[in-house]
Length: 110
Image (cartoon, rainbow, N blue to C red; front, top):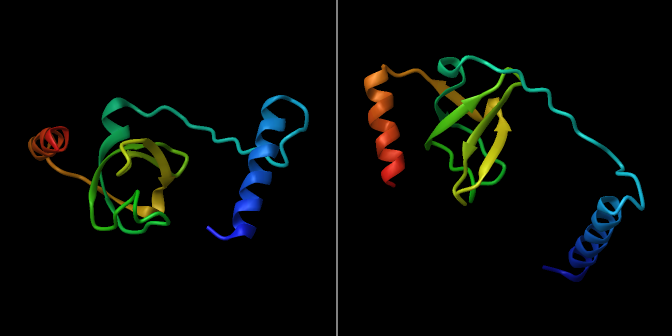
């Protein structure tokens, strides 16, 4: 990491601490409204077709997905962390329940 990027990172971390302590207000806030879908509608599998973080989200890989009506998809990324990505990063896959069961077992075993 070059010095300029490091200095910006340090300043950003200091600003984050000040925000958490309530010393300064955040410069912006993001609110995401998620609505509940039925259990059958909001879970399934998705094929990744785009990634802004290829080390965490691999194009052409099938992920177990949680869908929202807010145009977002939740997956477990390659670091093993729960993550939310834009729905346009994926193609929703509709499989028969037998196939979904097999895929689910394969992903749990991996």
